[in-house]
Image (cartoon, rainbow, N blue to C red; front, side):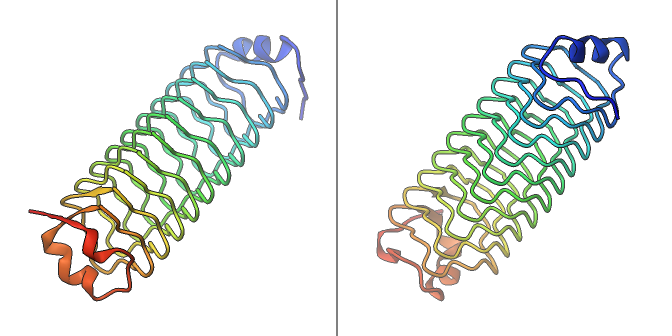
Length: 239
């Protein structure tokens, strides 16, 4: 495996190969603002690389190592990030519209303010991830791990969180209108001030979850009453 570090050679090689780079080691590479739209980057080592402001629309990074990589303000719309290692990756304010992270490991990553509309995270590990103020409209998190993750004030309308593990997650003032939380584990989660109007909660574990001033559809009242939640009496019931 060839190795290129901390110089323009990495970028020149990427361009020379017309966007086809597989199993190349670009750890610590400085690729700020690079145009890699539609590139094939399967299995690439990009640990600690700087790809802030980069154009990675429709790029395929399946199985790549992106640990500690910086994707701040990058455009990754339509990209394939399946089974990538994104531990502690910086994806703040990135455009991830329609991106796929199936089976990826994003433990401790930051996606604050990112656009994740229609993105897919089936069976992904998002434990301790920061998604505060992110846009997650219609995003899919089926059976994903989101333990202790922060989704405060995130926009999750129509989001599919069925079977997801949201134990001790922070969802304060999160917009969850018409979201699917059926079978999700929300034990100890903080949903204070969240809007769950039209959200599906059947078979969800809500034990010790905080519903203070949360807006919930009245059709879910009997389901919630059966569980030991916090601040049941302060729930605002909606039609």
